[in-house]
Length: 140
Image 1 (cartoon, rainbow, N blue to C red):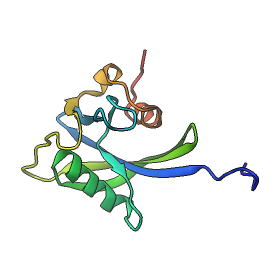
Image 2: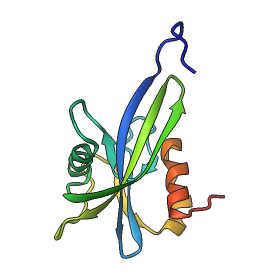
Image 3: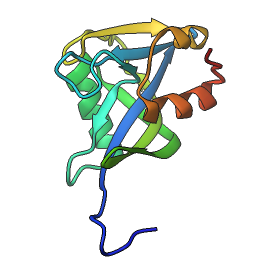
């Protein structure tokens, strides 16, 4: 419960895409200069003021892995508390447009992995519980 005597926590709205191809999912690795460097996540990023979630997701994916996507339904929404701020994660299903092949532009790396292999890739806390539940992943 919020008390007026306490500063309002900062909330960041982020969007991410579940992009599946032949039973594998596209994940990206955060660059060394990013917050939580080296962790893996589904491609996406912050929603900027004035953007809808869908517009932000298409922009972030184009900037990070150089592909165009068709954004489908929102699969999950979750708020995760970090020290001093919270992250609202909106997870969408998306499909690559024909002829698109991801490349690492503003990410350290990208991979196509099966859900069974996700446990080998550490995800940020805000992403992990939601995606594990959605995809039926059981970690260690």
